[in-house]
Image 1 (spheres, rainbow, N blue to C red):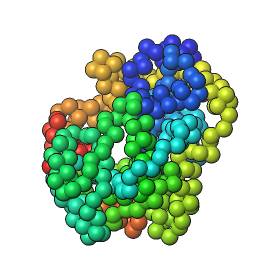
Image 2 (cartoon, one colour):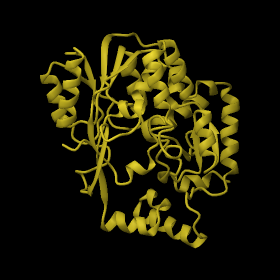
Image 3 (tube, rainbow, N blue to C red):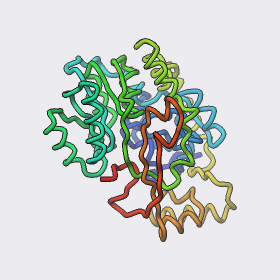
Image 4 (cartoon, helix red, strand yellow):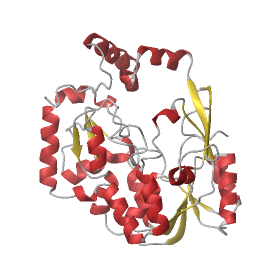
Length: 355
């Protein structure tokens, strides 16, 4: 396919642009800035924690796979290419950053309940200081004030823009130890850099999530369970090796060959838009037209019934969960609860804390 076709709808290819993945890949493979990168890739780390490869159903026609497990699952859905995770590429091309601080605590979505629950858990572990890594999603100023009042420092990589991964890399690199209250991607990133990692195992967070959240989560088969087992019983070197392989260090090789494979894959794509459903051609074209007109690429892979519900009766889930417990022991009423409520724009946004 002529790559100019990709350029016409480049604005509809959001995933590789998030967190700066595309810029990291362009630098690594010396790709021309004019070459479109219609690649879907997981936001953060795909830990095999969903019923299908994370974000593979997005409209980009090629999936960026950074380990064999992702490739095997995603190849059933769309064309794929094996390329290391952007984090692995960053670690490969970035000069060593001197450790300057002791403890970084990966915080939950910012909110009163989550902050109080984490503070309680930290006090039980005898932790009364360190820096809290806050994710800039929604309103965070009250959480920042809360932690400062409690004697903790605040750091953040900011919003998920083109410089996110680079900023997060610089932050994590400066700390000797990392403590997380969840299976955050940042925990795996830290382990891959050889940081001393640990988790808070009695922490419950409360967040808004998609209405069908519980239907597509795969807690049992997730790589998170193996990660936590090594964390509890293995060595730091074993944990680093596991994390590096999860992030595709095994794919680091000839950049020229990798570049050639990517361009070949782009040229072989027949349709610039991936449809996850097997609709009639006229239905696909109608969904494409509606999505482009409304500037809503996610609508392309939704049914008309789902679109109607999203517009006229949108719902979200209120989730309370102890992620560490779920991944270690399985889901139960003690570590997971869910209820469905109406969606309110700007308030009940998926991924945010409930207060």
